[in-house]
Image 1 (cartoon, rainbow, N blue to C red):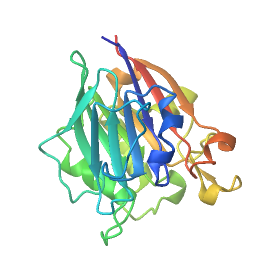
Image 2 (cartoon, one colour):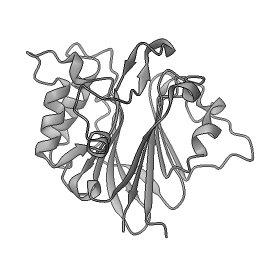
Image 3 (cartoon, rainbow, N blue to C red):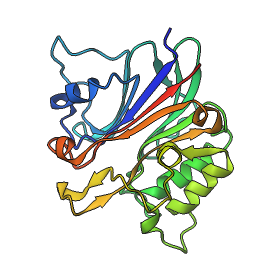
Length: 242
């Protein structure tokens, strides 16, 4: 049984079926893929490894949130899931030995007058307050947010979300690993419209203290390779669970 957990988030900018092989080269255990097509449209060739689970959430079959598990890991949606929080999905994830709670995130809800992006995460923190704990917990995906866009009078801005998570003992793996400050990241995860001169860091993997202690590596994809497929690059986070 593997003692490794490799979780990758990558906003693929749709048509994941045409790009899946390039991300599977990194041997993920869990994939969180915003802007992924519905499973009925994700037709894979016979030589492409099939996931153990493929969960999908969305209203547009071309563009939703996909969660795929591989290796010994399997995942299922927690009963407490609140569909109105788009799209923050609580998952029970296990490989038979290790049990984790992962919140897959694509913070995007244009129907919410309170806020389309980070407001969704803030609301999820309130609703899932008791289950988001400092043990065995991750929040992973496209948060569509950064401290540089904070609106000071809005309670649920990026900085207050980060502060609330830190109070719970949950920290950004990227910022911990690279000793970075929120809003001053050296590694962008988004190049707006694939322009190198429009870099932003908006994709994250937050992990509870017990997992931070087991953090092995954090990688952020490079511009030259990944912008052939999307204006986002992947964030690849590996833990040694034992």
